[in-house]
Structures are given as C-alpha cells and as structure tokens.
Length: 607
Image (cartoon, rainbow, N blue to C red; front, side):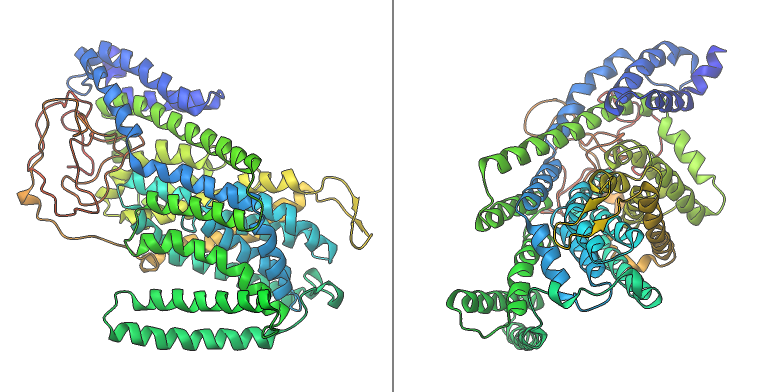
C-alpha cells in the first residue's frame, strides 16, 4: 500500500490541491500548505518510491533562494506600473471624455453609441490593461446614456461587457505579461503576437453591431438632433485627416530617403503632433479654422493614443523594455491627469493603495506556487501531467481543444493570475513535446480567458457590470422619463451573443496560427552549449537563480520564465534581450540538483 501511494503521489498531490481550493482557502496559502504537507510525506516515502521521488530535508534549503529569485525579477514591476496607469486614467475622466466624444462623432448613425463603447473599450484596454476598470467605467458612463435613448438593454450590456474584456487580449494586457513570463518568452513578442487577433476581434464586434443595426434598427436608434451637442462639422474633420494623411506620406518618403529607421512610425508621430498642434492653436486663439466637432475629436483622442504609442510603440521598436514602458505610461497618466486638473492627493493615494494590494496579491500567489513547485517537481509531477496531455487523441489539435476547455472552465472560478501561475506551467511540457509555438499558445490562452470572463453565470465582467447597473427603476435626469432597471438575465443574454463571436475567434486562431505574429528568434546550435553552475549562493550572480516557469530550452535567448510552478532554477546571470549572444556553457549537470531543480529523469522543455 505504501509503495502504491509513493508511485502515485503526484496525482494525489494535485487532487489535494483541488480539494483545498474547493474548501474555499485562498489559493496562495492553499498552494503553500499543500506543498509543505506533501514535502513531509514525500521525504518519508522516498525509500519506497524506487527512485520516483527524490526528496530530502536539504532540498528545502533552496526555498529562500527561489523566493528571492521572484522578488528580484524586474519583469513583475510592469504589473504595478500598468495597474497604476490604468487607475490614474480612470480617475482622470479620460473614459468619460472618450465615450462622450466618440458617441457624438457616431451620433447620427444607428448604433452609434454601441460603436463608441467598443472603440473606447479597445482604447481603454490599450491604455489600462485592466478589465474591471474598463467595464465599471463604461457601465457607469455609457449604460445610462444608451438606455436614455432607447437602446435594447441586452445589446447595451453585451457591448459594454464584451468591449471591457478586450483588456485581457489587447496589449499592454496584464494577462499577456504574466503569460509571457510563464511561457518563457519576451513580453514584446507576446504583445506583437496578440496585436492582430485583438484588432480583428474589435473589428468583429463592430461588424456584429452594424449587422444588428440593419436587422433590428429599433434596438439601436441614432441620437436625436437635440442630443448632438458638437454639431456636424464632419467635412472639416475629413479635410484635416486627408491633409494629415498626405503629410504622413511625404514625411515617410523623406525620412526613408534620409535612411532613418522605422520611417513610417516617425512619420505617424509627426503627422499626429501636427494635428494636435493645429487643433490646440485653433482652440486657444479662436481662429475658427476647424468645426467644434473636429477640434474636440482631435484634442480628446490624440492624448490617449499618444500614451498607447509611448507604452507599446517604444516596446515594439525596442527602445524600452515592458517594465520601462510601464513606468513611462504611469508618468504619462499622471501628466494627463494633471493637464485635466484632476491630479490630487486623494487620486494618487487611492491609486497607490489599489496598486499595492494587487502587487501583494500577485506576490503571495507566486510564493505559494514556489513552495508547491519545489515538491511537485521532486515527485515527477510535471511528467505525470505531460504524459496525460500528450496522450490525448488528436495530437496538437486535440491538446489545444482540451486545454482551451479546461482553462475556459477554470476561468469561472479562478482569477487569471491564479490560472497563469498554477495551471499554465503544468501545460508547457506537453506543448513543447507537441511543438506548439509558445507565442501562439499564449495568445490562445489569453483569448480563452477573455471568453470565460464573459460567460454566464460566473463571468467576472458580468459581475463588474451588475455591480454598477441600475437595480431599481429610476427617473432619467435629462429627459425625465422612467427607465426600467436592468435585470441580471438581460446582462447574461447580452453577453451570450458576444461569447459566440469570441468562440469563433478562438477557432480562427487555432486554424490560422499565422494571424499571430510569431517571433521565433535566432537559431541556436545546441551542440555548443553548456551550463555553468556557480558554487556559491550569494553575490550579484543571483546564487541559486530565479524561479522558472517550466523553463526554456537550455541556452535559449528568450527571457527565462520567472514564476509559476517552476522548472529548474535559472543559475547565475542569464542572457537577456539586450545581450542575445551571451555565452552559455554546454551539458546540464547530472543527478538531482540540490538547489531546487528537477530530479533525474524529469522531462520538460529543458531536455
């Protein structure tokens, strides 16, 4: 009996973790307690396991160094930076200004407010990366306006919830940052891979709204003339955009002739700056060159778009790392809030408190996952999971379908941080064996998580919207008419129609992986590699190294994964994106790594 338990300790440990979670314990403490409990059991069962378990009390000494590896991982600084940026932008009233202006821009069109919600949702996703902030802001601002002018509650709530979840897949999504870390790929590559699917999904939402506007025009009426405060003035805006387009083409040709790198990017920057300068001068001096609509659209839209370029453009161009881009975004958000006159002590203090809470939440989950992984690896847990997933029928396609369903269901109950740090590292070895590209895999997982956030009855986005939607009938302050309360069933029915679109998009990503801009990186000759292991555990080299995801292949130039259920620790200074040609020493060490790596025979990406 003891031998049977010893040979099946990995599945027993996994089931025990699930039971801990079902009992309602916080996942960080459930992981840590589960890891320590089975560590003690594993040490006692090691003599009966015939080499399948390799645990001893000395291995526990590696735990402090692995925790230190988490704390010194610069990549995780991007999470509080982007969170802080999103909260400051929310407090600055940017969402309100965007929704009002774009709603006025599309006012004469049927479904114009729905178009505005989707476009603003995409912009908020690209500037905040936080689902809760996007859904709550748009629910508070746009839902009363849509109901005021006769929009169907199901269309209204569905558009708000769906566009809010774009923050899961639209760079600089926090989901993509964490997934890049867990999959051992650079955040910049993950952002590039997710950009096209995110834009296509936004376009699909807009196309669906246009279709509903044709089929059911009464469900999405145009704004009445008295509600269009900015007037018409579309010709003025169109002329200005044509001039900006001509300036872009001429500037790009000139910069290209001068040999400037990325001429299209710099030409875009100059054209946009020119637009902003013209609109600002016209407003300050009262020249009357532009219509009120054109002037307002340019002044309101360009600052958040400039912030998107500041964050994503510098990352894509290789000017800044994700952490540096997040820091610039945080500073840019403070500047925008200051310009609007909404930067106060209370705003900054509230943003700092919320950011600190989220960062602490993430760190505690990582610590719990580290304790869990130390035991799980030593009992061949990842080998059991890998063999289980690789044996699924259908090969790579079957694996992707089953994993998508698994993550979709788990998304009902677990936050994406918990899924990314606990579940995703267990999937990586099987994905490597089946030759699934990690960027493609990460984008697919982000899209699935986004769908689960929108799915009744426990989708998080639906909960966020329910918390701000009217629960009782009320009298509209503008029109004086009686507005009926939003029922929970209407929110659910509104979400279902957009879930269908997202499921179709998931299928498209699986069938057409070329939509993801996969970055494979330089080819490496594995025969010339070796691993150097420092003898000491202190100093600048990092000692035992940081906690990995399931790790990257030895010598990979990709960023080492730094969290989750961990593969072998990363030893010493690792080659970074800034130094991809750094030397790595061949042949991994034999035998059990006393510093916390996997015991002999454990397979994974590093083998």
